[in-house]
Image (cartoon, rainbow, N blue to C red; front, side):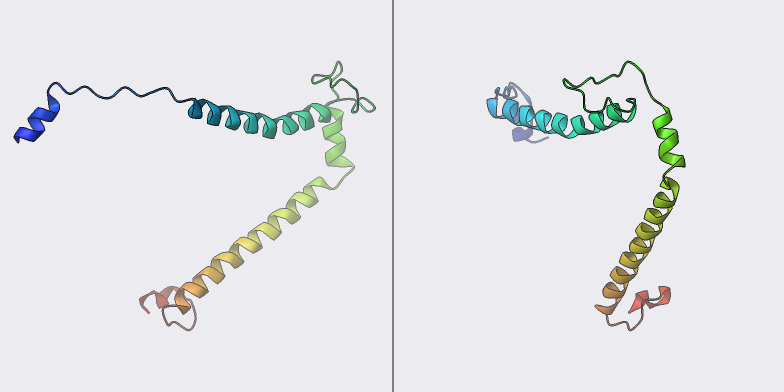
Length: 123
């Protein structure tokens, strides 16, 4: 063990971290942004279980007196919700496969390969 290492370990106290108001300010801003982001989602969920005609009450009643679960039943029976979800999944997956393929094409083309196949990785 060197003299420097042994001297550094003895009698040297770690510095105390100072309290910084900037950290408090940053945390306050971040908490405000999180609450501001979550509030509309909570309002949407609250409104989704309200009976018809009570969506626009003022002041806002976050938890309704009567919970109308049949709103969800109507959303899945009267509207083709599952068809919309299926279409969204198809478009997303086709887009994902296209992105992966074009990335692979570009990556192998930069190495001098003509067509990106699994055996072309040695180009």
